[in-house]
Length: 135
Length: 74
Image 1 (spheres, rainbow over the protein chains, first blue to last red):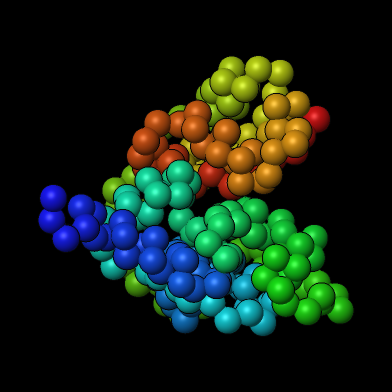
Image 2 (tube, rainbow over the protein chains, first blue to last red):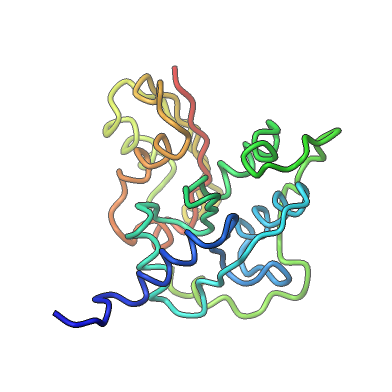
């Protein structure tokens, strides 16, 4: 036995999830999402005016692998609130439209709900998407 | 590459009594709406997990590049 954690990446992911009230694991960054699903999830969070921490899983392929095994959720993005997995892009979008997202986030109830853009493509010129070449 | 019909069949086989509407324009990006009695009483996360579990590790994000999913109890 040593003092070193057996899986430091997994522990730092768990730590990030527990120490940030709202944290989104995504492809790219909120400023430059690299995938439509991540862009759409950011748009929903932005519409509720909630501050959130974001982790770019593309920074290192091991992040995605460890995160999915930790959360038992295969896809990206993944939104956690108060340490709990809220869901991926579909669930977050659905909860945004029902007003539930604001409730979960503790944000003020919206006066009205603007529809999210149908195609949430990255706003700037898309950088090379390596994952697309793998499929 | 799987077709929408194949993905539909896999979901309906794996979740008995379920009904899946699956569409795809390119056999890489899929959109599925799944209704199943099994979803009753489960959270959305749990409902989606049941569907995701049908696919092999690496398949979602791999040969099935994206699966937009809506689930509803029936």
